[in-house]
Length: 345
Image 1: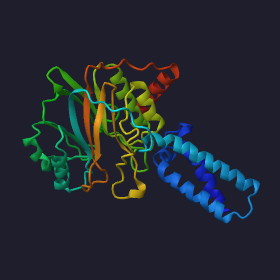
Image 2: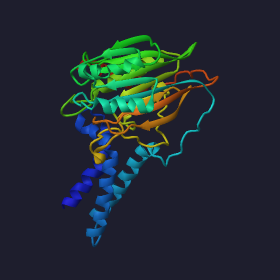
Image 3: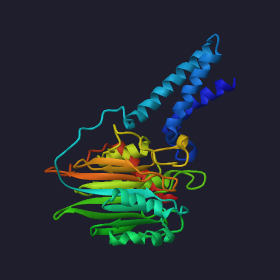
Image 4: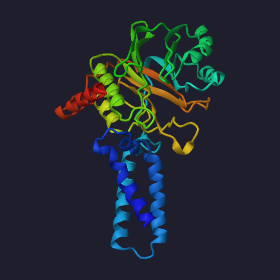
């Protein structure tokens, strides 16, 4: 009976996010799809082992379990290394590299993170959860990264940018929550060409943070609307506190036409760095179709509960920024609804 109950629960819980309820309990199933797939496989093998004679109930549970496993595989398979990788590009007229990492405010392994910066030698360094202590200990970067944007906060949502080139049109925005910043700027890659960056770190839906995903969803939708008003190469990166196969992230990519470079390369799960069996791909980078990512690497462990990600982003030679994708009425309404719900809280 216990086995039956477990099979039933793990057969219906993967569909909880489709209900549309923004409470963390219903959204958690999106985060643990890889883990629940493994549990489903174990439950299926246990059913085969213990069920001597299959009854209509056990047959029903077995079919339900197999169907749900297929649904989950459909969701996550594009982000596995087995999925066909997008055609690579070679022609480029400029690039920028970035190391983006949630350093964990309470982590004091400053030298370990600095070693990662030295190892990758990126053009840009983005830190999240960086407070005044982190700012002080990363000040040594300013010799090689003289252009900075500093938003030290003690609420686990501080953010810093360190750049080798002067940033243009810098804006620190609090799009939804008054204590959750995002940083927008243009980074020059050639004399007359630049890439627009949106660096985000919205709060996750969880028992210890925001009860629902409304604020996170709204920030992503507002950023998407901003990108649709631009006509320039654009990158969105940061700790999104969401998985790429969630409905919200898929809607964001649909409204912007942006690409996730992980497709066909692997999951690059970045959290939790301390527990391999509870690891999710929460740190993302998306880019417009006039760009491509030639190289992406997950960092080594530096004391945080996240790994950092290194990306080498190239601008395609002689390729213009594509027009915005068309959106139907239902998608437009969903975007506006998500934004309004986020602003209500």
